[in-house]
Every structure is written in C-alpha cells, then in structure tokens.
Image 1: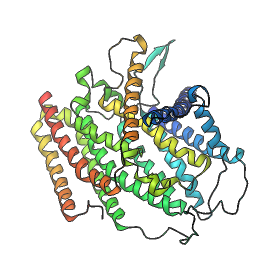
Image 2: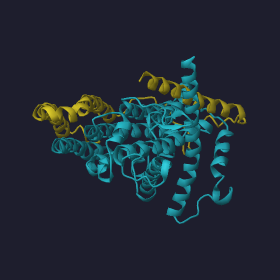
Image 3: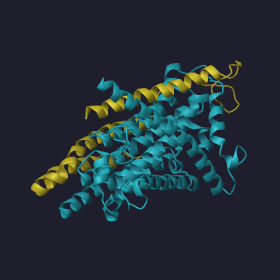
Image 4: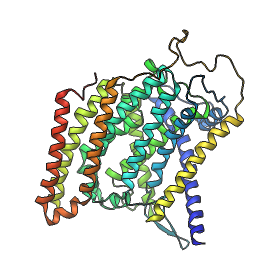
Length: 336
Length: 123
C-alpha cells in the first residue's frame, strides 16, 4: 500500500516535470528565435499571437501533422530509435537535478526534484554520454552522405569534449567532497563560497563542452548548413525530426545550464529577499542568465573548422583540466 | 536511497513512453500521400550515384575512439579519489597527493606520447 502511494507520488511528480519541461522548451524556442532575430536586426516571430507568443504552439502542431517519411534505403529500426536515443537521455538528466531544498506544505514534505541519489553527477555525465548514440545512429541509419558525415563529425567532437568535461568536473567534486548535487550546492555558502571563484578553469572547459554537446555555433560542425545541408537529421521529417532540436537545443541546453548553476554558481543560494520563494527565484534567474549567455555565444560567433575543434579539445582543454586538478588540490589543502 | 533509483526508473519509463507516444501520434494524424520521389535520399539535384554509405570509415575516427576509451577510463579512476580527497587530506595530505599525482603523472606521460606521435592531430 505504501509502495503504491510512493509510486503514484513519483508518477505525478515525473509528469509535472516532463510536461513542464516540454512547455518550457516550447517557449525557449520563442526566446531563442526572438533573441536571434534581434541580434540580426530583424523582429523574429511576429504574426502568430501578440509578438509571436503563440508561435511555439503553431510550430508544435505543424511538426505533429507533417507526413512521416521514411526514405527507401534506411535502416528502419535504427532510424526510429535514433530520435528516441537523442531525446530520452537529454530529458533523463532532469531527473537528477534538484531545484531547491525539500519544503513543508500543508503537512506534506514536497521535494522539488525527482531523486537525490548520491551519484547524481556521475548519472548526469553518463546520460550526457549516451545522447551521442542518438546522433551516430541517426547519421548511420539514414544511409545518405550528409547525415553520415554530420554524425561522424559530431561523434568526433563529442568524444574530445566528453573527456575534458569528465576531468573538469573533478575540481568541483574535490571541493565539495560529494557527487550529490544537493550537497554540492550546500558546500557553496555565501557570495565567495561559489565554486566559480576557485574553479575558473573548470568553468571555461565546462562552457566549451556544453557548447559542443548541444551543437551550438562555434562548434556546430555536425550541421554546418553551408556544407552539410542539415547534418545528421537531413533525412528526418515530422515528429522524428522534431525530437532532435527539442532534445539538443532546448532540453539539453536548459538542463546543462542548470548543472552549471549547481556546480559553479551556488545553485539556489542567495540573499533571502523574496521570502519563501527566494531559492527558486535565484535558481531560475541564474539558470536563465547562463542559458542566455549560451544563446549569445551561439548567435554572434562564427563557426570553427572541425579539425580546429577537435584539436582544441585535446590540446588545450585537456591540459587545462589537468592543471585545474593540481590547483584544486592546493586550494583544498590550504583551506584545510 | 533505493527510492531515488526507483524514481529515476519511473521517470525513464514515462519519458520513453512520451517519446514513443509522440512518434505514434505523428503517424496517426499526419496525412499519408505517397510520392514516387519522396523516399529518395537527399542529393543536390543530381541522380544518386552511391546507393549506400555503409562502407569503410576514415581511420582518424577510430583513433579518436581509442583515445576516448583510454582517457575516460582514467577519468573513472580519478573520480573516487576526488570524492575522498577532502576527508583524507585532513589526516594525511602527503599520502593522498603523492598517490594520485603519481597516477596522473603516468597518465600525462601517455598523453604527451600520444601528442608527440601525432595521434591528436586531425589528419
């Protein structure tokens, strides 16, 4: 009986999180398109609803009612599996991200996270790695030149940044002495307690890895429009296609920004100036700032070549993370 | 603690079901108007001359994959050390620092070797 109650509770909470993430991702498309428009001195979506406010709904309906085309020579099972493999791991990271401390409401303890396991950071890294498969499967299954090249390039780029990201996260773990994201946030009390002051190198590497992992512009070789049409999802249509940008550009970027806030900017810590809501307001404000920073980079910088990107990953980012581990060891011993 | 993993499992099931549901919904409500050319792989307006791309792949990708296996395994060994570093550094700082830095030194030696051999170059 108790198991049933727990299960129902988790199911309801998961549904709230997933549906909330979908609505948020839909409106993040509008934010991104408006932002991109104004960066390029054009208004962006304007006609569907007031200043394009209904545009995400129109887009979702359009994607859902497009014909579901499967080209002739594709590997059909992998072709469908690829879009799921891109989408599911991206949203799975959301399951380990805490949005605040547990609160008491009407005698019920409400936890603003799905689960707080003690290996949350490792799980987040693992899900991030699995999402590479979606891209590779999409490129391979399409059996067409441009998707194949796009998928391979993305795999090569991600491999490099995956390693650098793994070593970069060693720094925050050493400072906090924990893999649990909630304990990492608890370890960062006060303005100068945030890990960004001790881990600037790790943060730079993390930022580069997020840009590479979510395929944003300085590193978007996998879908360089001018050379590869649309990269690994060229052959996709309908909702199969819709899941790729949804997962990669919106859900993954949102979730990895949240992870950046937790690891480097002290999560929901901040002055209690908004009363009971202040942890959530701080968390979402920081998250939004990181997200907008990523958009800013995306829409202003030109693209690197693929050889430059992989060489930056191996020859610059990796030595930086090694250096960071040595520096962090010194900091931890000096702080006692 | 096991409740946490149970929650993750349920979250996984729901998100997978949602992804599959969206794909099925798309198939159900989208129109199906077959066209002889719609199943044709994308090509820039010329007849297709390679039926398949499932052929051999450039060796540089293989090399990168090999490096990933090597360095990601090393990272997996560094994580537990990072976890306990703060606590053991209070008791015996010299021991935990030298132990790991010997390990990292060997790793960096391998890294320098790979660099000098040109394995990190995009060729």
